[in-house]
Amino acid sequence: ISENVPAMLSSKEVIVTLVGIPDRRRLAITVNGVTGPSDGINATASIGFLVGDVNSTRSVNSSDISGVKARSGQTTTGANFKFDVNTSGAVNSSDISAVKARAGVVLP
Image (cartoon, rainbow, N blue to C red; front, side):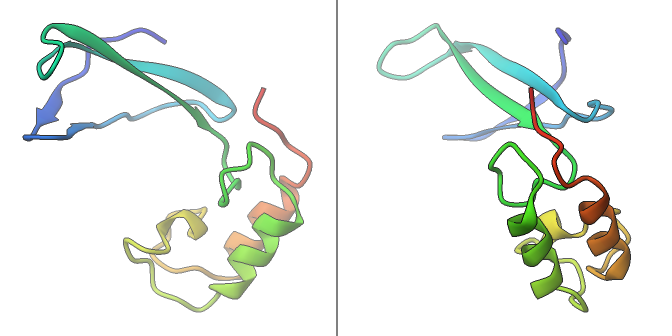
């Protein structure tokens, strides 16, 4: 996927909002013209998207299921949002079921 998206710049960070990224997809995000010790460089970060991979191992497995179970009953916050797989605002049995259903799925 190659597309120009607006980015919000700060002194040491760039926030890029991505929407509509398909599951099991890898992207390379490039920021052109970065200033600093080497002005004008292009900085690239590679990231992958896999629904249910709450521990970022590039596969959905028993560790992900355990992680969601451990947070069941919690309201979604900035600290536990990855475990709210269905984005309902709370970690609950629906999230656990969703992760269980994806067990064995890997990021290509």
